Amino acid sequence: MRICELRQKEVINMCNCERLGCVSDLEINCETGQVIAIIVPGPCKICGILGRDTEYIIPFSCICQCGPDIILVKVNIEEVLQKCKY
Image (cartoon, rainbow, N blue to C red; front, side, top):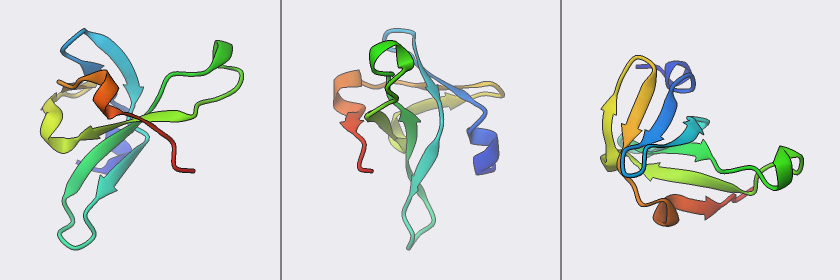
C-alpha cells in the first residue's frame, strides 16, 4: 500500500467508535524501512478557525484492521494525543 492511499483513509477508534480523522503522515524507521506509527491531525481549536496544535501519533501495533475506506485502531486517546513538534 502506498502512502497516498493511506492518506485517503479515515481512522476510527474501536474503543469508543470515535472518528479521529484521516492519516496525514507516517513515522518510519529509516534503517529498516518499517512504519512505526501513523499520524493523524488532532482536534481543531475554537470552531476550527485557529487551526490545530495537537496530533494523534498512533503506533503501528495499535492498528487492528486496514480496509478499503477506513483504518480501525484500538487506542487510549489520552496516550496518543501529543503536542505538534512544529
